[in-house]
Amino acid sequence: MSTYAKSNIIKHPFVLLLTTLFVFILTVSKPVTSQNCGCASDFCCSQYGYCGQTDDYCGDGCREGPCHSVSAGDGNSGGGGDAVSLEGTVTPEFFNSIISQARDDCAGKGFYSHNAFIAAANSYPSFGSSISKREIAAFFAHVTHETEFMCYIEEIDGPAKAEDYCDRENKDFPCAQGKGYYGRGPIQLSWNYNYGLCGRDLSENLLASPEKVAQDPALAFKTAFWFWTTNVRGKFNQGFGATIRAINGMECNGGNSATVNKRIGYFRDYCGKLGVEPGDNLSC
Image (cartoon, rainbow, N blue to C red; front, side):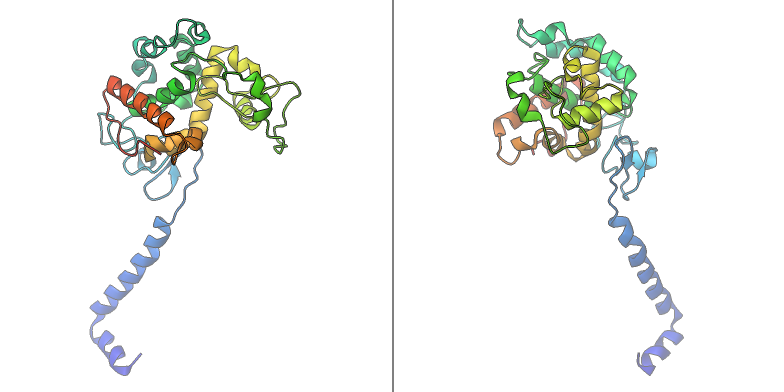
């Protein structure tokens, strides 16, 4: 530094103060904007990139997780709006307006019910906690598409496709002999590792008995709740399109635009029934 520069700073301490403050701002702001949460499924990633469960983390600016807006009372904010009562929102009328559209000969009409849904929600409370009307609409949009209005309990021709859903490279959850891990339940839980992880978290040995998902309606709904909270909820505040990618990314980027549009159509319909706007980023 030149003698002139040194002398100038000494004569003008305000310049030194501004320089110090500028360096401090750069130092502090960099790690804040470069945070990457990776929070557990029941934690929110705040606008500053930290994990937590209070309004400071889950409110305005929340990036992912069970986000809600502390300032929006109508359920139309980017994260899906304020939390609502799951039982008060998913009424028998709303539930039955979906399943009533299934064909009369559907096995699901004698299996899925509003009572089973509520029973499952009561025993899996993390699904309904901090949920918004928009997220409820998204969940049922995917359920509708995966099961054709809750018509199917199991994947069509599932037994014939059993070998297609066994990842033999997965040593943590090896396939049990004679068992098929094809789609079952409202979200069509698939693959041995998902049955294994879900069963572990629900205290059910689904790896040994995957057929239980198609035998117990409350358990079937709980597997859907598990998949949603584990794999989908963290993406929801990015828009409905991100949830499509989380459930079946092969449909995205032109993979199957017809099915993507069907999911979006169901989502728009249910948002309308629940009185919320669908928001942005609907397609994947």
